[in-house]
Length: 167
Image: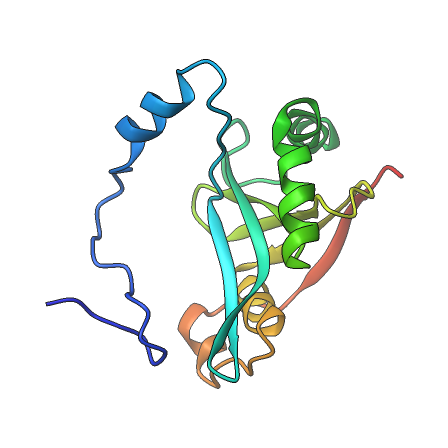
């Protein structure tokens, strides 16, 4: 039986980590001229019963520096990757059309640290968040109040700090 949230949207059913659409994506990506991209996560909220996109999230795992803050060059390489392929251009088109920013979220393997970059502004500023601050950010962009037990759920300090400003 499918599960739905309070707005009638289907919630994630499977707990596995397999991308069940990978074969389809590869089928399309490998054909000449079939320009396509995927969004890793689309954050939205409801206003008067209608869905409104609040952010497009591009997710990337920090694998070369597990569970520690990578050096500035690592973050620069992430941004360069988005700037140098069509992802930045498509992100800008989608962001402009939906009036919602594209945010790169680089996450530690243990999901304790998140580094956010606003690709729409593209201003060379990364923000570091722990899990609590990251979840609070998700509530904030949806104009929601976080649950009162959020801090108890994750037992972490609430911080937000500017990491690197190379601008």
